[in-house]
Image (cartoon, rainbow, N blue to C red; front, side, top):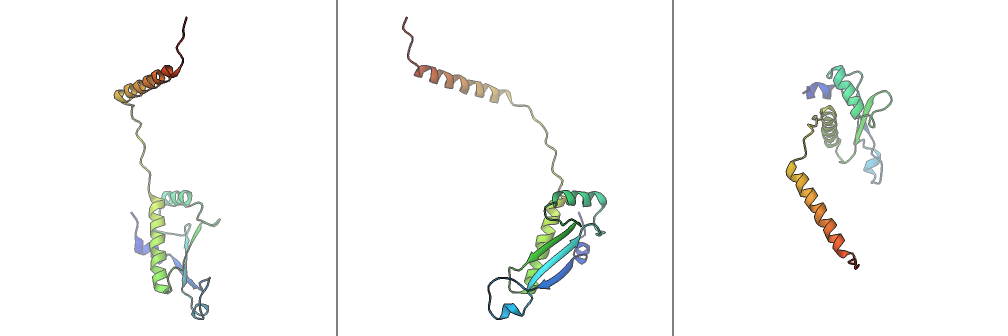
Length: 135
């Protein structure tokens, strides 16, 4: 589908300090990883793939069509980098998927007959609840 190694080489990595509660160690170690990917400048995808990604990832992209991912789950920078890359590749793969065309099918005759039977039995059931007419 696409060359993952080439795509990973186009990513920009930045190590930043994690936010949130922590001890003395968290204030001096940059373990959180931020990935930036410039969709317009990539050479891995052709124009149609770029357009598809722009449409599918519209809510995740900035105005300049830059995808930014952060990962600070682990205390290890290397682990965070691996997680972020996996997440990035998963997002790209899902974005490039072409949905299958739906083939409209005819409603089977047996299903129509079954529906009409159930309608008839429901109407009879409700008609039996009414008081009988005495003339």
